[in-house]
Length: 303
Image (cartoon, rainbow, N blue to C red; front, side, top):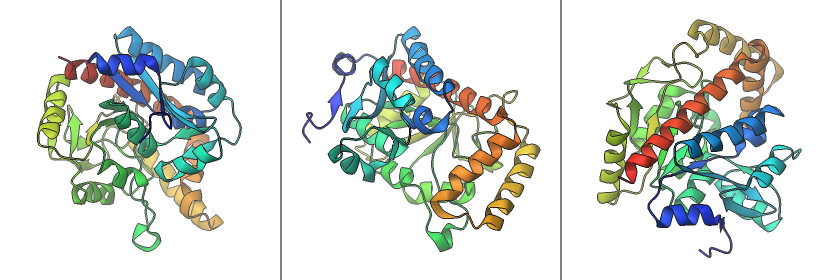
């Protein structure tokens, strides 16, 4: 693949070459996930937080058709304020590139571009997974199959609460993607600390995470390692409240005939409105914690 097709910022190139810590950050959180002007503030604060840790941030997106690893502040600002911006998964990259469009990259596209640039750690909010009713609709996120083929560490707060979590964990197992809890064997549910489902392994330090990534690479395995980092219990949505909201949201979606790709934005918008924006606060708290942990693990990988 030609490096002229993908732009890697010089700062990122230098850090990777010199074995200094780098953390990849996706752009859909500020192009699609958060309202203005909070989206830009969160994006820039994530970069500032990593720099304060001595870590190079590599925010990834598509700018004028150029997949970019290490967007500038000016580029992040432009993408944050662009209306009707493309949401770019891996399948969309060649289309958006050829049509010279702006785009916010999903987990799948971000992981692909980060790995191409030699970045080993990627912090995000929540992962995509298996949707309810997927046995009939085949509605599954491309995040899963993409991460089965890209050797990177992905730090998240689990998959989004609106998804079929046990089915998603089964798919991770089928795809040979290891799922490890940070300080817990209770798999988090993005908005909540504990989704009610268990996972087999837990680690307690960035050094233990780094050791697993190093062992994966030494074995020559191609898949990502997923690190599930739960939001703090005092920052989560009350689990009973979330369950109640999700039941009502799904009932309303069914009543309105909303399904497929339209269901995710509908459900997330329902949660946001029903919690009067508190879910957005949790989203930001989740992201902030995952970015900080990403910096610690990236530093451990360079030692």
